[in-house]
Length: 101
Image 1: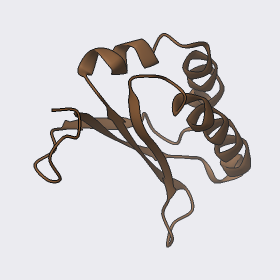
Image 2: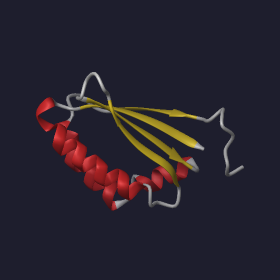
Image 3: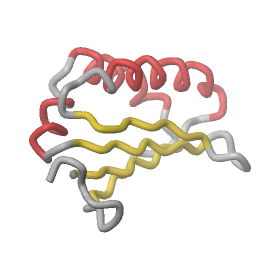
């Protein structure tokens, strides 16, 4: 599995616009064959902070995701809503074991 955690900080005046665009992207992302999970979280104590937990079967599936129309639309819609550039870190799963193996 290829796991990506994306942290995003949104300007307070754009919270609803960001949530709406990201929910649309997430709903489309989970239909991609290489996507295992695509979770969208908002921090409970600071509503301007969000996390995307993206789990792909392979790193190549993440690259394919970045070529989809829904991702490109999301990227273009939300970039200017951010208080700072988003950050992402890649992980590998230690537990539970990959179901694909």
